[in-house]
Image (cartoon, rainbow over all chains, first blue to last red; front, side, top):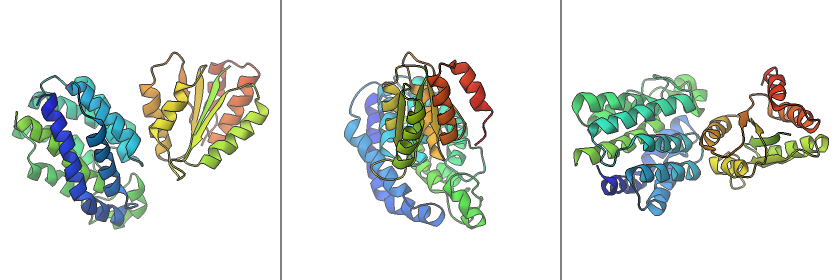
Length: 194
Length: 120
């Protein structure tokens, strides 16, 4: 995935989050404050508008800065800061190995800044296992990544606003885990198509 | 003399705390920001803007939830010439103590030690 392809994949997320807004809103209404759909939509609309050129590193960094300033709550800054951190590791031509390294950084950043670990029903449950999926299967197929988000359905939230719902959070896929699926799938798709 | 930086979810908390500390520490520069677009919240841009205008080593205070996360990210990305410290002390009491100590010329290191003894 070169800079042009990376940019196309990130711009493509505008369409994805436009389409998935109501799905994410519905999940977040169940176990949060209902703003995750509109937040992700706003964030990637801003990326589509503001990020237009540069090297892979520059594109990732600008995407991160844009997400940090345009999405409220915890998820925007976490996604944004992770993109900024991942930009350091990005090669000019991102292949599967390089993407796996970037996903390791994504994982470390969310763990450190979000103060989260596995099994707490968050975006981390998808992000932290995606590098493993990529290394094992050579790609990031939608069904494989979606499975990671589906696994959060039976978990009980202990972090973020969902934690106030305790046992009631069981039975709903975590909205942050679901939005992470779309982001990671888009990155994986870019590598698949060379 | 250290600068004080205050980030809150509420503009009124930020402004009120700044006024409180400012009254006792007139010579200390206090950077305060709260709320996002008139609503409750914090945003990394407002912290970046404040860090862009610091003129001394700075001690930062935050209130609840994601304010610490945003503050940590902004401080990690700060590449200016000053040392920026995050205090886990309670926003009002901590910034008050730091402001007063800074105004009487207490070393930043010693202020940080005192702040460490305060619990949120």
